[in-house]
Length: 499
Ligand code: ADP
Picture (cartoon, rainbow, N blue to C red):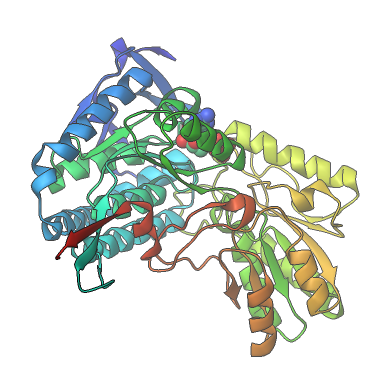
């Protein structure tokens, strides 16, 4: 951290793939990029090299207050408060168009800031565009009902926006999580104060610039760079924020809920961790199943809350699947995120790298077998080879705890009952998958797994129209789809006496 004296509000960036653009570095409050009240800034690190690439201005509680006041004024008094729902939708569609026009810049920022492979980053931006358009389409289709009770009254409900919404997002999909949060909140007519993760502030700031260009009135969307314990905590406990949406670890999710309870009982949605089972039956197409196991765990370098990190294989095909999966894992191209062939880029930070490697050591100590990987890739940055642990038992910590890296734990199961028992042996419940050629097996397993998503013969195929969220300690509420509109509206009942 340092004084902001040397940190400008904008800076020309040239990324390793030659993309040049102007990066905003200030806090985006009330439609302008500004410096923080306490004059702080923090470093941005390129995880592919470990080098500091610049600094951004840092929000503290004082800046959260200013942003909330701007968002509150915009909600009650500004042009936003009178804007038609169709016009709100148009603004989201315009923002989606601007994401499309700037796709290369946005994807390159993600590869640079997060370390993810550019091919995946482009996919993220495509999904941002889809999500923003989807919610742009919803904006003028959110309405209440007439409810008949008796001839002496006329009753109807309205779906009203909540007001100022606080949104706290993680570093694994910096822009996609930005779009998942902004899309439904704005479609419903709220205003937002969103804090990006301290590891990945760059994309959210560039997207803030696009919000301004799209024509959102000042104060409707405010984007802050800052740390969880200061700016994040100030959002969670703010008395003028009436809804908080959080994506991140289960540990922090608990703190957010507690802060909401102890302040103004703001409404809370949480999308938290997972330890998702990926179950392969002997009647599955093995080659295809192996592809999905690979994609399920190594996509985004394993930094996915829904990663298929527990793989259960029916005992008759266990050895065959291990052999095929070992080969497949070793063909993943790991390395420079800007190489178009790369599938697995860097882990986001040194802290995450160390955390994952400590789980690798733990798995060895617990007696699991390292089939492939288990070590650093290359000599600089935070790259880890795709790692496969076999002979993992239910009591091992690598089978129970979220590792959030390219580390897969594999075990056997006997039959449907055993698969379901093992699949459900977790306090989490975000996602799951079953691979089988039998529709009845697929349906039985899908019905009995306790998880917010069950993929059949696939993995990680999320879509903005499909609700996503967790059972158990994986969270509260659903994002995406029509479901997400519930998070950002409240129902008002109007009852008129006709007698
Ligand atoms: P990770 O451990 O993977 O970094 P976190 O759950 O710590 O994930 O972080 C996710 C988001 O939550 C980030 O934006 C972070 O700044 C924020 N955060 C962390 N701690 C708190 C907190 N105590 N209150 C509010 N937000 C927090």
